[in-house]
Length: 333
Image (cartoon, rainbow, N blue to C red; front, top):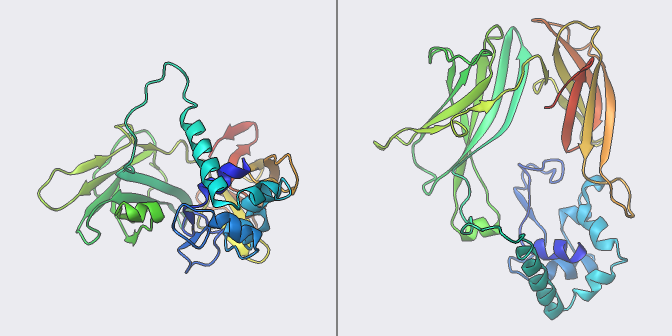
């Protein structure tokens, strides 16, 4: 485990846009694991010499210092052995070969998947305010020319799965961002743009799924991005984390005020179960932390539109909301 992580973290790093609670400086696009871009043992030597800038070793969020816990778990003995470049290269070669050879008998491998997906949807969030249901999401689009002119529309179907006129269930992207790749992606010459969407949805009809149409504006056919024809599903709209009302309480305390919108009255009982894959101990076994918290009625967010808002504070070290439970019904987010 120690050697495998060290071998893997000789390349790459942590991107701020993907892990803002790990790389806390919004101006810091990418924090690499070591100071070189080569496949070498700098990640080991810098760790042992206490000169490392590896955010998973010396980052401000103690909970996410996973590399430190792994590297030090054997009293640094394994890391000391990897200080030799020859030992490091031989160990990594052996481990990577063993990983490749773990395929069971009878399995036929495809050709190596060297290209990323052309389209990736991320961060679909719902919120309710001033009589409207809002949904934000992002679509990453791969492309060789970052300066190309692309028109992308987001469509959605109502709660019953029916499409409505384009004037009512369509929105264009509101902004776009350049996507920054790892060292390997840069070497491959990859480029991509992330498009942002902010849809205003009529609460009475709501939303059950959404999809996109990509027009390159070059005479080619419009590309439909619809998850293989089924659309990207919104399982339900009566219980969700309200993204616009939830907020980081304080960066110094590492807590987020979580606000959950519930279609119903204040008599509902709401709990949230969180999952943190990083253990809060410094010695093995490093087990994930699963906690359940009760939510209280949020007095700062009065009920509106048939929704009651409940709130609690959760640690920013939490990586996933496993589920939100309402009375005896449980819906996984």
